[in-house]
Image 1 (cartoon, rainbow, N blue to C red):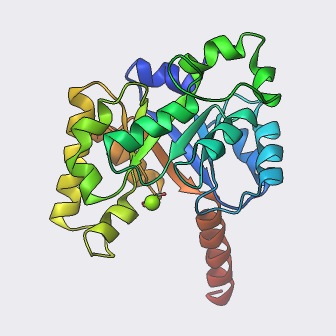
Image 2 (cartoon, rainbow, N blue to C red):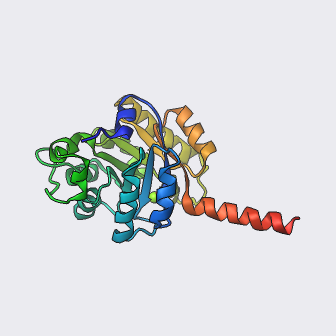
Image 3 (cartoon, rainbow, N blue to C red):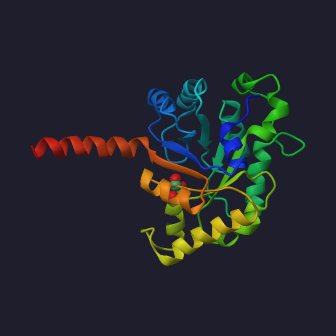
Length: 249
Ligand code: 3PY
Ligand code: MG
């Protein structure tokens, strides 16, 4: 099995940048995968990826150097196994609030003896005849810390064996604090607490960033796994700019 280049970079302490995809469009995924991002995330929690569209997107990303990841709908072993069997090289699991929930996500993504992922699938084995033997090393498992409760338990969550990345969801974290804006001092201090917990145990920490400026700033702070935009927001921004330019002519 070809080494997972995102895991290789993270294990070497290098930052990785990704692109978030919500459109459910394999065609857009094909173009995004040729832009040179380290990873592309197909979001099945908040995006529009039916199983068929997800499969088609994984097929067009596979021949490129970009690593395809899937955010699954929830921390469900069946959904995690299914995304990996379809050819995702990693999963991001939302709303993980405890070490036990993190262990459940790892369990679903790893084959025995490390986990309980079921043997099967076909596209996964296009990665090599040794897929079953190598997958436990090469499949990325990211668990999302996105509540106050989870952030306060960050040290326990990052310590769960098999967690490759802890990924902060700042939007849900703000919701859990009762604020819709993301800028409170408490919000930021919880973010920094999670970063420190990951760094103390040498587990890479990521955070959702909506634009390249945030991604670069967070990478400078030590976050190793950052997206820098999403397809629908970029498209929205660009089409609005076109209309504004036309109206201002
Ligand atoms: C959040 O900010 O809550 C996220 O899940 C980012 O995708
Ligand atoms: Mg979230």
